[in-house]
Image (cartoon, rainbow, N blue to C red; front, top):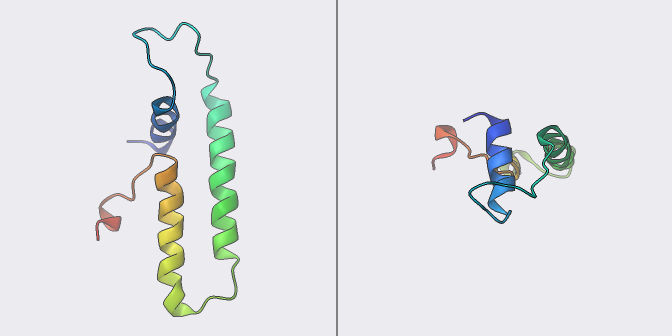
Amino acid sequence: MELYEEIILNYLRNEEAHLLFPNLEIDTQEILKLESYRALKRIKEIIEDDTIDDKECFIKIEEIVRTFEKMGSDGGYRHDF
């Protein structure tokens, strides 16, 4: 599944569902912009942390993966451990 689809599906999980969405006005591009910016900001904070050593690097990568998971994206088979 594409990242943008995962983000949209994750967003819709929090909405009240009807067979039709008569009152739901979603600008998918705006959702993608907001969620992408939030994720990139968090990732930037993680990688700019120069207080970590090599042993902590794995933990930081895990934080980045969790950032994607919060948006509804999984880590794929590479994060299956």
